[in-house]
Image (cartoon, rainbow, N blue to C red; front, side, top):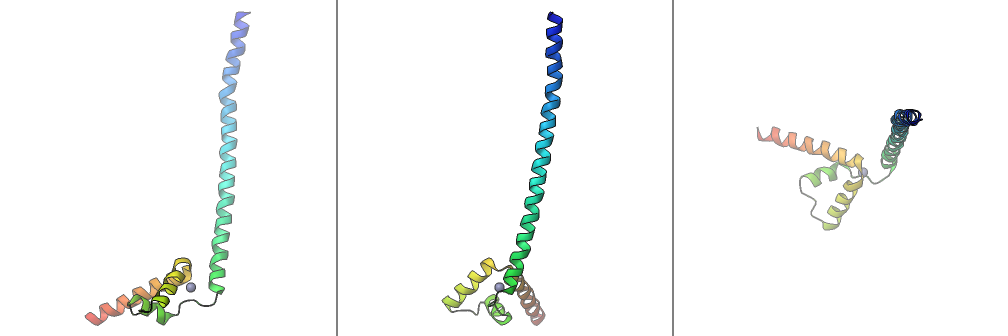
Length: 112
Ligand SMILES: [Zn+2]
């Protein structure tokens, strides 16, 4: 009788970790799936947003990007508008960085 009860408890003991591991594994798989889904959605959103930005009129033109980098934009309003645009527009940030590299290269060449 006592042995039977012990045997039963032992059997339960053996089962619990397996069950826990099973559910834990399911949770991990579920979280993994959710993460992958979220990642795909984020990538789609980033792509769509980039496309949307490129389709917007009123990007900063190359000349203004050069003036901005050279510190030639003195007008407060214009400067604020340029900086605000650069806060959200990845397209112009990329172009601003390219302009910066170009201006620096020209400067370095001029100094030689
Ligand atoms: Zn822009």
